[in-house]
Length: 171
Image (cartoon, rainbow, N blue to C red):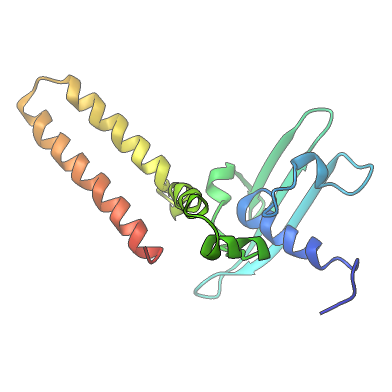
């Protein structure tokens, strides 16, 4: 595809930053800007299902203080709303260890699944489960007869969301 040192990995890293708001290679935030600069900006144009054009941008300053901002069509959004808008799957040579390595590596991969974005409105699976558990705990404190019914519904919803996510991931 090209000679060494011409920027192939930089392009992949930029796509990863737009997708995850961080390095897919695990590079520290302060190492992402160009040498002797204190910020970076990654901007990408994408066409979503249905043909609509969208612009996604991630801006990060390292100094004087670390800050990061994300924009969709020039509108600032929380980082959590940006993650997953540009879905990517990264497969690196070291990922072969998932299949050929120890069970501990597979468990570590499965442990990360709750942070996969379930839905742009719902957020991550871990966030959904956390909200449901908080709601359930609030109802457990009530001594109203309706609280038992609501508690059962919340528990069933939690199980349904987890199953749906695992099914969509093919697990």
